[in-house]
Length: 102
Image (cartoon, rainbow, N blue to C red; front, side):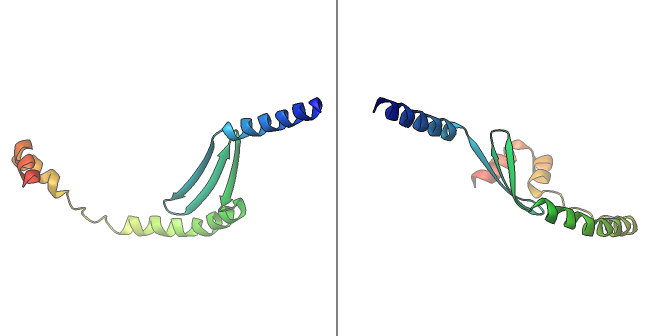
């Protein structure tokens, strides 16, 4: 009976130890969706799998060359400046505070 309790205690202690180790789950959607799980030193990529990633890279390489050619031909559009920043530069910090208050 005592050995059964030792075995049961060992199993419970082992499970508790495993659950005390943090698990990191990464959901990222910048240009493509990425779903990864990190546990200890292990890293599991759920989506996209390595095969899908390789296929997409081989397909996108010619597109990158086309994009580079298009960028070289067309000049970049003028980006609009932030209106709050221009107001701050023209009027100063106190005027910006007054604008925010009212």
